[in-house]
Amino acid sequence: MKSIEQTQLLRENLRVLVRKLGVLERGEASCCGITLSQRYTIVEIGRAGRMPVNKLIEVLGVDKSTVSKSVEKLVKIGIMVRENDSEDRRSIILHLSDQGQTLFKEIERRATAYFEEVVVEIPDDQREQIIEGLQYLTQALKTSRCC
Image 1 (tube, rainbow, N blue to C red):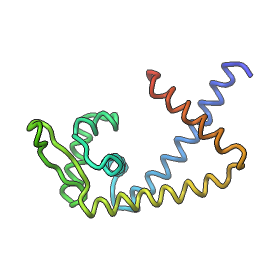
Image 2: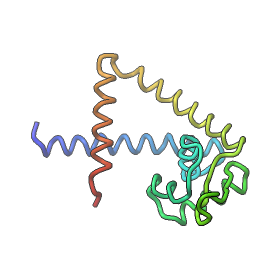
Image 3: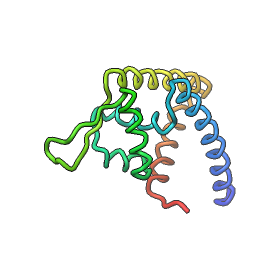
Image 4: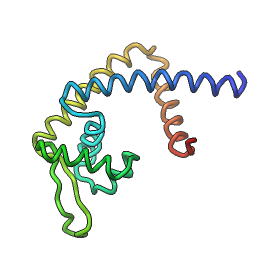
């Protein structure tokens, strides 16, 4: 297969994948009473345990105002806790409250359940190959500049 054909197939498959996952994520977020941006914030903080605001901005790849709005709302509704860093007074550390931990675990449980259903649709002998291919693709996307 020619490189241009591979490129087109990759683009088409990724377009469908992004659309399907976007619909899934929006549905997951709305069923929990939060926005998609807030869901991303909860998941990243939940996985890290504690994280400085600047690191969250870097991880999410969005601007400071987007993160600030999301964090402010999550703090206000009791999902997230914001603390001054004892080692660097200029830095703010974020972590989930008990309520936030419960929500994070529910988000993770639902996502895992969904992808368990997806995985069983993939032939056993191709699962590892697909996961490995996705790892290569993810790394390539991380190192490539966009538009």
